Length: 55
Image 1 (cartoon, helix red, strand yellow):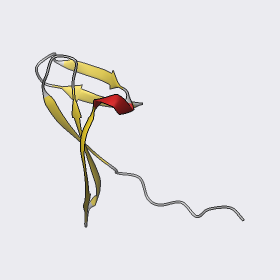
Image 2 (spheres, one colour; image 1 turned 30 degrees about the horizontal axis):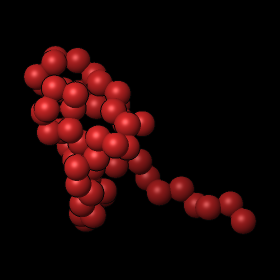
Image 3 (cartoon, helix red, strand yellow; image 1 turned 180 degrees about the horizontal axis):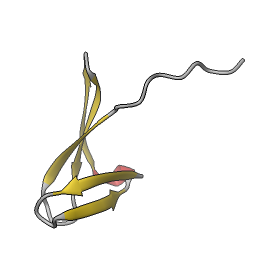
Image 4 (cartoon, one colour; image 1 turned 135 degrees about the horizontal axis):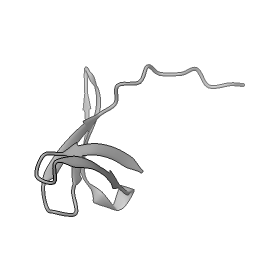
């Protein structure tokens, strides 16, 4: 699930993986382009630091 702000609806929306339009691997992190229920395209950026995987 993704929580992101939609300027068209002027609120935070919850979107599922089926809303993913595009994934971009950039130097600043992974960008996920999502389609809101209203049709607006939104970009969510991975702002979290990578975490080590426990062995």
